[in-house]
Image (cartoon, rainbow, N blue to C red):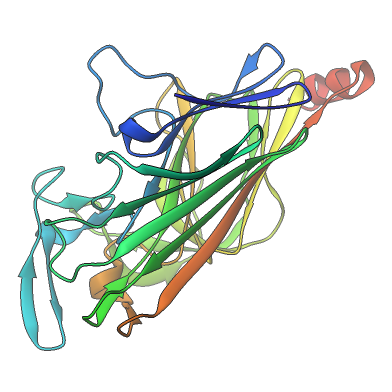
Length: 269
């Protein structure tokens, strides 16, 4: 485990657990779901998704005229990429930052590697992820999957949402978002994406243009910035030529509420 500290903020990074952020605490407030007793890699902390994010329908896709079949991480679909269950190699490290890398592995038929840098400040966590192609052209996508502890209220406003079919996977059609709860992919945020707790407000921001919101669990809310939609290799594949790189950023920023702000938030709720 690698510990980062800045002001009241404390972040624990676990390279052996898929390079994930295992803990992010501001004072006594832990923001992330802790590792469960069963060790399920899919349900805790905050992890990188690459070289795809979310589900791939039946684990199958075509690229450059060839058909590919991936391992089914959540049968009958492939899910969340190849690196969130793999150990990462630590590169540069300091009191407030760490850089790591991980090959995309044998599950991915194109080669390639993913890098991430995690930097902690007193009021925000900055995450940068890049994925690089080796000698083969390949489809590529990156994203994050933070499991936030359930907030008191949340602010999610988007212009459009992908319609899901009977398999629970986007069919490519954009619609007006219905009321939640959701396990859906959205585009075009209309306001800051925020989680409100009694003592602080958390704002999640990213240069990704797709957001998966999963707020159905009673104990957690997932806010997942992605560079493309679920099943992106079939719906909207981004291509990397040999040696090319795709890079995205995510920030988790917090504002500690004063007494008056806390009361106002409780009144609004």
